Image (cartoon, rainbow over all chains, first blue to last red; front, side, top):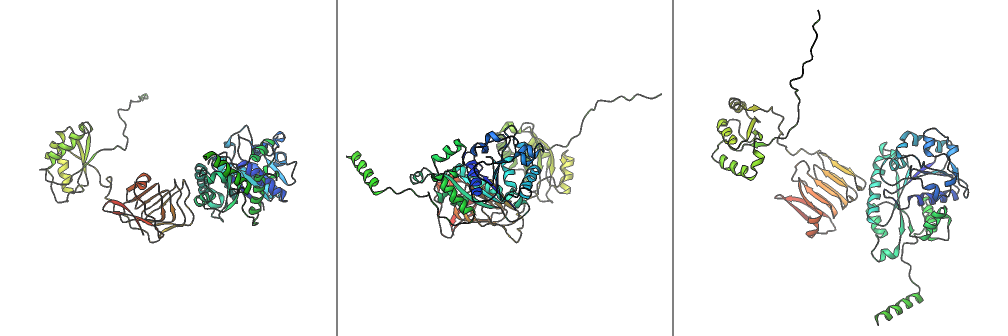
Length: 279
Length: 231
């Protein structure tokens, strides 16, 4: 039975789609048959990040409305076996999503297509799109940036996860919640410009899946239509790989959370430079 | 021959509407102090009382006491107030009011004096942190939260509130008037705390030094003042 995972945050622009792309690509690379669904109807982005925008013919809404079948709408990734994308509609809005329709599609993906993981890329906000993306989930990954508004919105989303999802409504085993802290910059935390990992953990009080450092590789990968996890040279790509290992229950040390200690030479040079300024 | 029916225009319609009327709670059946005090009240906002209908409430008057309604009406009308009826009077008082041309407002329409409700025996226990945007109300009972209350979350109880974690949101204990209710928490940095309607906001909490204690903080009412103490 496929595990349904929602990637959510409340706030926009924190890295939900980047994370959905990385998570699905990572799980598929590990050999799990994975489908990633874009719930952001009307603001379709996932296809761009996954680099399959030219191959979208039918979409999620077409399947819900019975205008196409899932076989026609699912796009098979060209780089990774086992990875499929179900794009959102760009011409409709969130009202085109219905609880029954989403349930029907998820059931088909689980039973007929036998996926191992279904990743639901939630839109921002707490309205219908976000609500339906989380409603059937078994696991939630809450993507948060180290700043106060993102943390508060994540807190709000966690409240919804524990009260309005199917698991909550039917008093089943509660949904598993994980924190993924993205765009983290240890230098700025040290300067006091950014909330620290401990601050965020203190407020949200859920297990930490990983910390993704602020990285130029993310924007570059997005623009090229390649999930950043495939760029294993980059710190963000490695951090996502670690996060997926933890998601699968492996014990991996947390990287990219401490400010890099400067080497002896660099330190000598920087104190020299400072002395020069003061004299 | 069939008579043609003529539809008559409706002369009126009868509807029940909620309106807000001022209510005068009579405390003394003796009127020696009444005129002077009424004069003072009307002088504060004369326009508010101009031709304003008013209901006289007798719940503070003993059933056996007789009231000089003509005297009361003269006093009120001299300030252009229009008394329309009484409520919560005894049978004799109602009869006297009827003689004076006042209406009788049926009992039960007035708010009964609210006694603090008896609390249920078991507390409501919340096993998770209360998140931003969530509201929890423990009706007629205590509320125990095993976790923090996030900022912009609200917890309310008719009884006490106990937070085993940081209280960052709003906490209102004794919301139906229990002045003995208390708030307990491990760390206090609330947006608002209130006991039986007496409240303090974050600003005023920041002004005073909120004590810190390894055993936690309690908030309670002492002579209508909200006190914050370490346990």
